[in-house]
Length: 233
Image: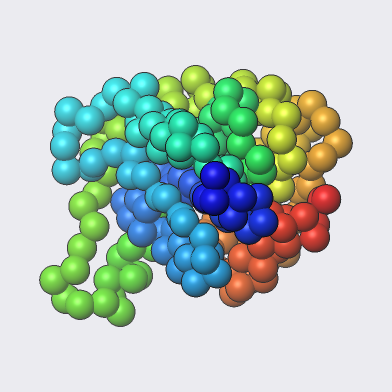
């Protein structure tokens, strides 16, 4: 009883579940987001969707399930959930938001529409190669196997239609200079969301890795404003 009364007076902060994209760094690419919100007292979960060192990890349903399990467990514990998805993770996040009662959804350069899986992989590896030049000499991220290309395409095909079923408020952010996922991907998703509690912010001069860009601090502040209803209340 005391705990319930305390929670009414001081409700616990929602859990943020952030889902990574089709990149060799996996959830590492979400560290800026995790650090930002953890420092503000939030619990941030970043499930790992796949293991590129396991050549048998090619079941698209399992990639989706690894994200879904974290969301389902948080909701099962009675927690409020805010959902974030980057690139491929944005498409998965929209699918999960269509079937679970998440409060808010953020899509960062979601991969509803993409040029090719080969380009996605090449750009991801280029970014890692650049990071390694500035990191420890023996630090590395294993490349994505060729067999993962088809899994990526299958995940997108399975999840993308469900953006048209999302009922919670949605914030999309996409860079004008995205070299991997065209801006039309977010524009198309925005048009399909079946309500007006949505906002698409187009970030001038920003490439695909939004959280590694010169606007990363602004993006995180915008996300916080969206979550706390200062934006799109």
